[in-house]
Image (cartoon, rainbow, N blue to C red; front, top):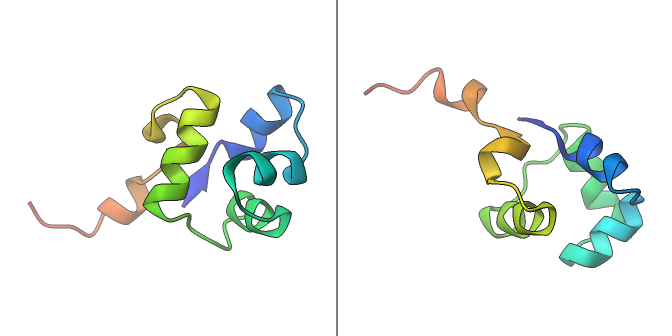
Length: 71
């Protein structure tokens, strides 16, 4: 899953550790999300979205996951 998390974090002048502390996860978890190695839980995605004041859809790109779904 692609995300704008690294860009948003940089725009707000936060380190990975800063952001992790604010949303209750480790710096390593933030790094893994930013590099696409880990997909956040729905709860974590909501906390990140709320922290930055954006809808989840503006932070995370779910289009790759929806391509194979049937209507």
